[in-house]
Image (cartoon, rainbow, N blue to C red; front, side):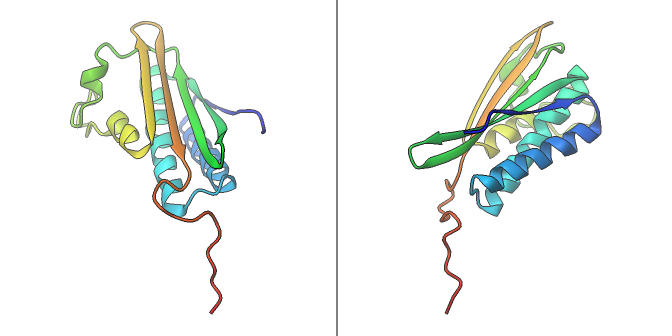
Amino acid sequence: MASAARVEITTSLDIVNARQKSRALAQELGFAGSEITLITAAVSEVARNILEYARQGELVFERLESGAKKGLKIVARDQGPGIPDIEQAMQYGYSTRDGGAGVGLPGARWLMDEFAIKSTVGKGTVITMKKWANQLGYQTNQRNFRD
């Protein structure tokens, strides 16, 4: 299995790079198109939070295999200000941003199969997300399109 891939987040262009990396890895692992969309949306949310609140950080992408099951693990980490109240931050509608919709972190959690967050005020935040291929009931690239 290939080693982990890393995308540093320091500019808005890095968010695009992280989305592209997640899309490419998900395609290689056989994720369905709709699952790839969910992954890239979650990656966007956590990368955008890194840039906005910590100013810099990284996303690390790792392929997962458990028997016949394949997946993608994404770890987003920064050394920013941290989140003082994780429970509050994980509620839909809560935002520290003026006019923010408050769907970033809760939205990312909803899009992925597994989601964990650890944050220490003044030290930073680590978010670990996992998505398993074909959890929506699709068959892995084995569709027969012949008559």
